[in-house]
Each structure stands twice: as structure tokens, then as C-alpha cells.
Length: 139
Image (tube, rainbow, N blue to C red; front, side, top):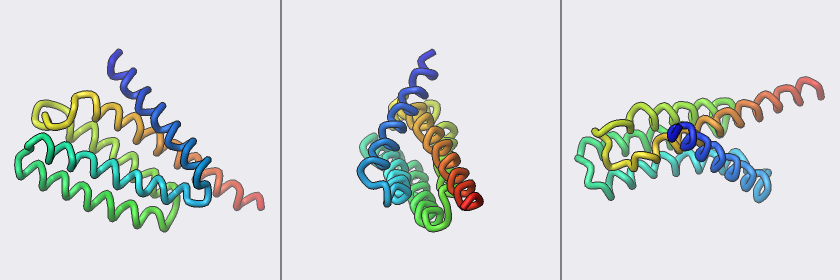
């Protein structure tokens, strides 16, 4: 039950993020999601640094930051669907890499909430991409 609540909390936070992006900067919506993608990866570096994680963990988190940052830049320039795949991959990063005692520098609740956010945003970007394709075909 707690996991479901955490996933829903992540999805609700995502809904607020999407609402803010669409409302405040509709012309730069995808850019906001790409910057958020980098920030999501950066949060794990911050947790590792603050939590006195081993050098190996810091290296893993910095590698993730580098990979996700490059992916955000690349995917942003191509399509919302590619950005969606990056957010889905980040959800797997959250769920698989940061669960369990080996990643004790990450708060227990954070990975699940973040995965809920990531999957919700990936779903939204997939719908946005489909809408763009449908609009292009019917125009």
C-alpha cells in the first residue's frame, strides 16, 4: 500500500510539473522537461555526496548524470518520444539501482516517488508525441 501511495505522489508531482511547464513556458515545454531530466540525475549525485557514499557509488552517480545529461540534450533536439524514453529509462535507474541497502544514501521513499514521477512524465511525453504526429497528419 505504501508503494502505491509513493507512486501516486510521484505522479501527482509530475502533474504539477507539467501544469507549471505548460502554463509558464508553453513554447519551451520540452526544454523544461530536458532540464528536469538532468536535475533528476543530479539529485542522486547530491544524495551520494551528502550521504558519504563510497567513491564507487559517486562514480556511478556521476556516470549516470553524464549519460542522462547527454541523452537529454540529444533527445530534446529530436522528439518528445525520445525524451519520453529517457524518462522511462531514468525510472528504471531509480527502481533497479537505488533499491535496497546498498544505496542507503538515498532516502527509502525517494526512488519510488521519483519512479512514479518519471513514468508519468514518460507517459505524458508519449501522448504529446502522438498528438504532434496526429496533428501533422491531419494538417
